[in-house]
Amino acid sequence: MASPQQLPLRDVHLPGAPSLWPLAPGWWLLLAALAALALSLWWWQRRRSRRRREAERVFDEALAAATTPVAQVAAISELLRRAGRRRDRAADTLDGQAWLEFLDRGSKRRDFAEGPGRLLLEGGYRRQVDPAQAAALRELARRRFLQWMGVRA
Image (cartoon, rainbow, N blue to C red; front, side, top):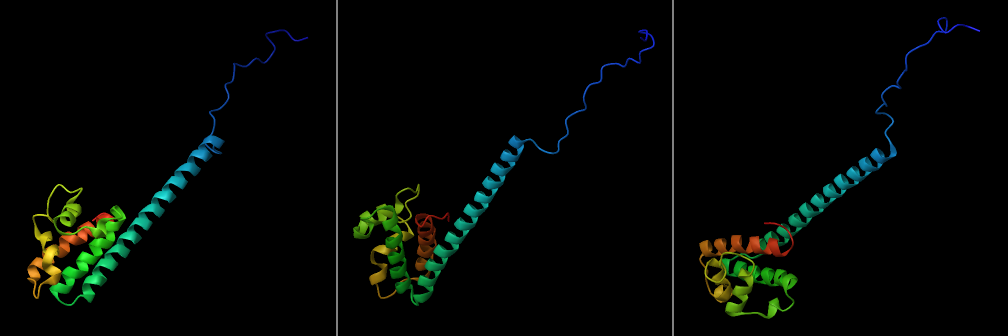
């Protein structure tokens, strides 16, 4: 038997640091969840963009088909009533000041009841409408239409 001085004793060896690869199962699950989240955000943004382009196309084509400012005011009124039904089923039955108040609902400004939106009351029935008034109404109505169709203006 060897004496204790002859035995080759070594100091305590600690194991090496764990490697980063391969990843533990929990990290794989986290990466999969993050990838799914990123994919769903991309899909949602793309769908939202497509819906916005479609709503803009509907609005712009309806106004392009209207050749006079009077016809444009009538087309704007029709588009706003269609979009208003998405907010309230009875929106298309409103008329006069009640309709303008409904259009202003949810807005801090009263652009329809007291501003260029008042043209909706009788603008579609006039012989002539000032093109500048029709243009102001078009911008105001386009923002409201896009908002009610579920896309940001």
